[in-house]
Length: 249
Image 1 (cartoon, one colour):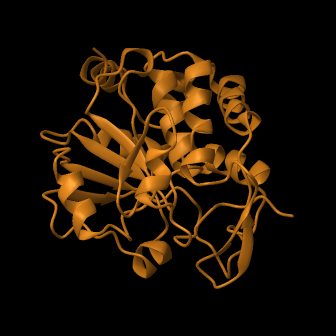
Image 2 (spheres, one colour):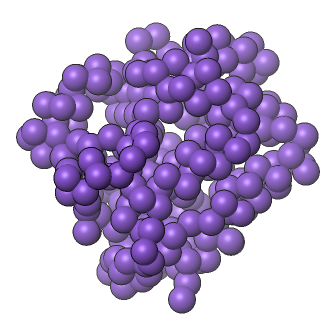
């Protein structure tokens, strides 16, 4: 079966299910696949989080998430996803910013691609958009921030991997963080069905380490490093240095 981008909001794990997962996954009602990137390679805790969308955020989840002091939410979904499943952030003191990482879809063609095809597509076409998203973290009072796509795995995984590589986090830690999406989405024991934004039933399969290491290898083959890739797409050396100074301990 196809391994496709996970755009479903169905079958969200319960709070208890998340609490039962050891490690860095955080339990907030209505938020899937949530974790703090702090502690990875010396990153400062409480500054940058990743997750699935906030479209199912509950009242209790809102109360708990407010305690994180979030100032910015970066949404990597496409406009149709945002329209169909808007984030429930009205009760949070956050600024929302949209940075869609996929090309304009037509009838679900992009959402029906294999992950082995989607990851190179994002690397090849979304560089400037990813730079814009990272630059947003440098705006005054932007932090703490949360970055998400539909379920916080593929688009979020690529952007986070590039940022962590820029911040000199070891690749084994980048990969381990990426693979946390399998337990975070309840995919450890196999795939789940979901509806894509066009109403097509698809299968969401567990991700493999080779997807993210392959994306990083593609970046390095063409640009030498994640920093080289980001610089080639508009990030300045000063901004790269500021991201390191801001996010690392």
